[in-house]
Image 1: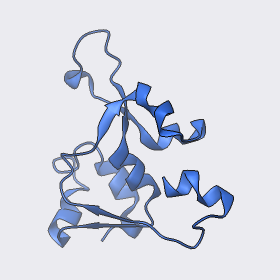
Image 2: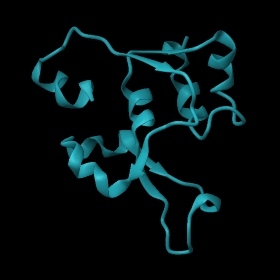
Image 3: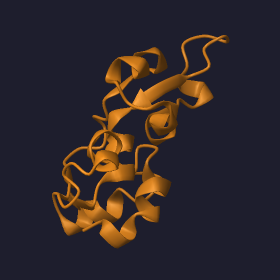
Image 4: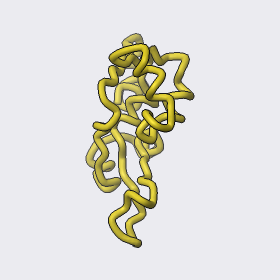
Length: 112
């Protein structure tokens, strides 16, 4: 992540990132145990933290903990664009947001 790995050191300070969302069904969700392999500071875990709803878990002991790369991009992007104005609205709804609708709604100021 540009914001976590480079900006704190003044590298790419004036660079901006643009996230293009084409299909929210493909979010890049991996087990939470992969986070240390990313080389990101521990305080950035919350930007990628993802918990699956209970109905999506495999068994009773599954806590549903994961990291979600698309969530991290939504949290840190300077601008977010979608493939159409209609999809821009759809991703902020419970039906179309694939679990990211509240986060995307909170970023409406940078969502086009």
